[in-house]
Image (cartoon, rainbow, N blue to C red; front, side):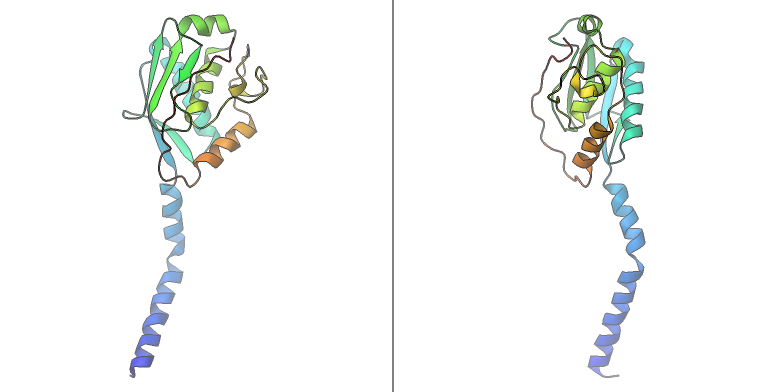
Length: 179
């Protein structure tokens, strides 16, 4: 066999092998592109079950990022008093803090589940919209009971985390939109 035919056969074999493998490689790549954000709710006190409910809501609504109980990510703490019903230390991050304040949650008029879903929304990349108080959007705060993110909010989180390999750097974030 001549060198030319040998190299042509080798290139053909490699091409055939490459074309046969993409479905597995694509599936593996898609699985690894799901970001995991670990959260520790061991200091959430009476809001522990509410945190779990909020995590279920977000995990059911988006596929590009998952909230998973564990350490080394987001630490959740409940205290008596603070500047707002809740605060998140960053927007669109995998490490940070969420604080919930009992007295401010009670006086806000919002459901505690809405407050918790809202603060996780910051962690998942969402800021406050311009229409503060719009009960259809969990990121709008307000004296509302609705704890379900809108389809636009879910889509924004999905877009932010899709294909994201490195976690964005945390940025300080505090707010009071439930007043």
